[in-house]
Structures are given as C-alpha cells and as structure tokens.
Image (cartoon, rainbow, N blue to C red):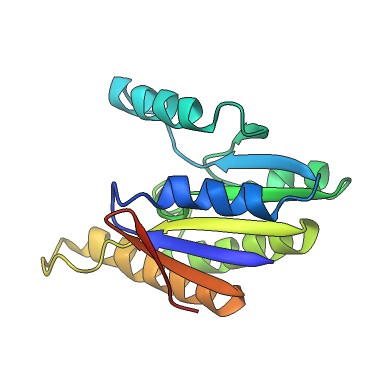
Length: 174
C-alpha cells in the first residue's frame, strides 16, 4: 500500500505517518528514510526530536538527503515497509544541489519513488503544504513550489490513500 500524508509545518503529519506505517506493518523490516539535510544546530535539534518520537517503534533510520535510488538495492533484498520524510526536503535537496535542472528534478524523483514503491510492501510518504500563504516569491522559490506541487500530484496519483493533517486531525482525502 502507498499512502501520502500531507500537511503544514507542525500539523502532526509526522506522528500520523509513523502511526500509519507501524499499523500497516506485519513483521516486515521498518525503515525511516530521512531526507533532511543538516545545516545547523536547529536542524540537529529537529532530527534529535524526531528520533526521540520514533524511539521504540522499530524503525531503522536511513539518512538519505538526496539520491534515494542509491539505497534501493539494499531494500529490495527483503520485505520492508518504508516511511519517507519528507518530500519537500528531498525536492529542495535535489533541486539546489547545483547539478540539477528543474525538469530533471521532477523526473528523477518520480523515477526514484516509482522504484522505491515497487521494492517495499508499504510506503508512507510525507510532504508539506506550502501553497496557501498567498505570497509571491522570487523565481527560484516559485520554481521549487511548482516542482513540489507536481511531485505531490504524482504521489497522490499513485497512492491508495491520501491524508491531510490539520491541527493534529487527519482528514482522509482519498
């Protein structure tokens, strides 16, 4: 099963995604695929907080800020369930790595997620809602929003369930 969990910052989407992943798990190896690129102490604290929230839930954490295709071989050799957090980080990391062009970022992520989805029993994907503030940003930020929007649309199309988490309340959209 593939599930997309979507919401704003601090909405509770991470906790909900972890709960969905562990509920779906029927004894498979559990992976938490973390895409956050660490830049400063604030990032380290956020990671520490997330690890503490996951403690005791059985996840093996794999830090992979970009190029998630590099871990696929190790995942395809066993039955596994994967929680990928989060797509907005992955898009930014791929987009701003200095090597990518906007179109190729979407194509690469689409191909990588398709392969990831094929190699695990359950895949729960977390993404952010960054689209409702009504502010127009510079071209680079608008390009990022467009790519993330396209990625989110793709993810919702391949997901059996899509959930939006608002103020800690999960609302099923699909």
